[in-house]
Length: 492
Image (cartoon, rainbow, N blue to C red; front, top):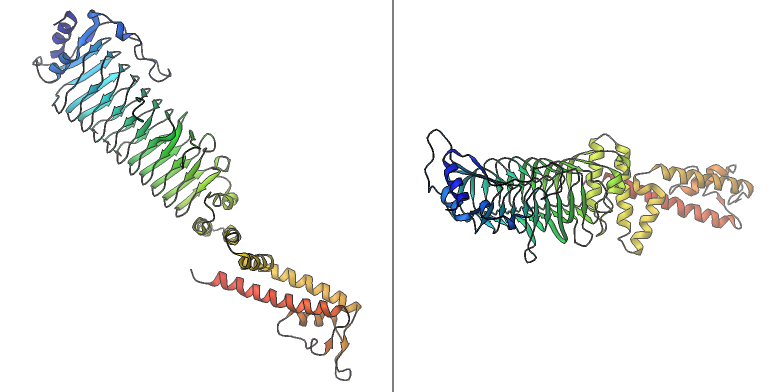
C-alpha cells in the first residue's frame, strides 16, 4: 500500500477521518456543484487512494477496533479505479468529502449502511436495487454522468441538495430512479439536473423537496413521476425551474403539492401533465403563468389554491373533481373552466356549478350553467345555433326567465302606443266592447286570449303586420320560456 492508503487502513477500525489535503469549504448558496474540487485529476500520489482498497475495507478486510465503530472516512482524496461493490453486504459507513473520483461508482444490488459523498466530483453513480440502512447523500457534488437508483431503498433519506448532475449525451436521464423507496424525505433542494429526472412508481414516505432546483430537458420530460406516491408534501418552491414537461400522471400526493416556481415547456404536448392524479391539497401558484398546456383531467383534488394572475392560458379540466376552491377571482372561474385548447367540455362547468351551489352561491351557479350552454352552442349546427341564440336572448336558456318579462313588457308598450294612435276596426260594431289598446295588445301576445279583444277587433293598414308580429313573438316567448324551464327542471 501507498502511505496514503496505509493511513486510511490504520484509521478504519476507529472510524477516524483521514484528511489527505485541503478541500473547498462548503458554502450554502453557491451554484450547484461549485463546492466540488475542480483540479482533483492533478492530485499526486500523496493524495491518491485506489478504489479497491476502500472496497476491501467496506467488505470486512480489516476488523474493527474494540469500543469503536469502524468506518471509511476520507477527505480531500483522489480515488482511482472503479469503486464497485455489486451485490455485496457492506456493514460500515462510507463518508467521502471533497474527493475526486476518476471513475463512476457502482453499488448496484448491495446492502449498505449510510453513504455520503458530499462536495465530491464523480463521473456517475449506480445503485439500482441497493438497500441502504441509513441514507445516501451526494449533496454539493458535481456528477458528470447519470445517477441511477432504480428500485433502491433508503431507510433514512436521500440527499441531493446543491448537487449538479449532467447526463451523458447518449442518456436523457440525469437522475433515473423508478420504483425508488425512501422511508424518510428525498431532498433535492437547489440541485441542478441537465437531463430528465425519472421517479416513476416511486414511494417517498417523508416528502419530496425540489425547492430551488433546476431541471433542464427542453423539448422532453424534465420530471417524469407517473404513479409516484408522496406522503406529506411535494414542494417545488423558491427558484424552482423546470425547462421541459413536468409529468405527474396518476401520482398520489397524500398531503400537499406546492408549485411556486417556473415551468416552461411550450414545445411538448403538455407543460404540466397531472391527469388521473389524487392530491389532497394543490397549491398551483407559479411565479409566472405556466408556458404550455396544463392538464388536470380526471384528477381528484381535496382543495385547489390558485390565482387568476397565473392561470395557464391553456388548461384542460375535463373530469377533474374537487371539494374546495381557494383563492381570489371566484366570479372569474367561469372563464377558468373554458380554457381547454381541445374545445368545449361540459363536465368542468357542471363541477364548478356544483361547487358554487355547495358554497351557497346560487347566482354564480346559474351563470356557470348559462356559460356552459353558450359554449355548447358553438359546437352545434346552424339550426341549433339559431335556436340556442333565440333561447339565450329570450330567457337566457331558462336561467334568466325575467328576460321574458322584459321582452313582454317592451312589446306590450309598443303595441299599446301604436294601437292607441291607430285603433283597429270593430268586426261587429253592434256587439263589440269599447276598444282598449292595452288589452288588445295583451291578447295578441298571449297564445290564448284573456280579454276577448283579439276576436272583436281587426288591425288595419300597416298595423296588421305589427299585430301578426306580436302574435308570432308571443308564441316564441312562450315556447322559449317552456323550453328553458324544461331544461332546468329536467333531472340529471
